Length: 343
Image (cartoon, rainbow, N blue to C red; front, side):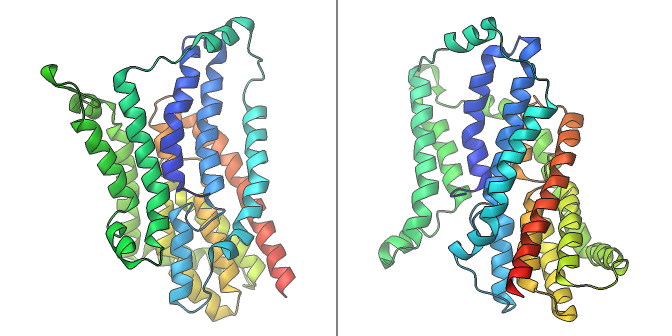
């Protein structure tokens, strides 16, 4: 909620991997790693929709609504719509993970493995934790300083974007020496190169390229037009149900940021033409675009978790599909209730 879902996933992923590492060779309990990792991705996406800063589509939707003079939404105003969806989907996600995975309690040997997995910090690890903490602190504090009424402070931190702070942390890890005589640093370059899942990055980049193709070719307009021609009367509830479903599954083949940037301007024009509640429809589709759980390219949390190599793609698709459908139903119901309350 308070940080971007990407940052939260990046922070929690090493912790979760450390928790499940003692069970790596226990075949009966490998499903625990699957549940934990999917839980991180799902919870990050579900929590991110609650606030404007939680996921990029929220900010894009707010900016476009302001640009088209539909609404100027504050932080708390967005939470009125996003938080109820989060509170409903979080326990539902837990239920899915608990019910769809094998119901096998940990035996005594597995519990003992977890208890014996004591953390002993080396100097290198202590530096890594310090850099990590400083980076997280930067992600939290810099946006607050940027909004302060002190011009000098605000101007000084203005260039520090979320991505730049992350890059600074990575560069610092490569420059701080552990054993200078052996040219050992907190993060050695060959370790960094070997640890990056380049396939996942190419997959994510391919999704952005596909989105650019949709924009350049006009394919996005064709998809929306063909989808809406079959709907008949275009009331606000009909638009909410249909467009949330469309963007939710369209996000599975593109990034949620790209598909929101592409589709929201089209949807705003459509709502204005048919007299629908543009604010509710845009909020609904922005939230729906972030609740895509099937494919790695759909959201950064999905890509990061899939990049661990511990989640088979068929399993991610199978479980994500059911969660997608539940998210579509919950978002549609919440937004339609808001429409009925306002009418």
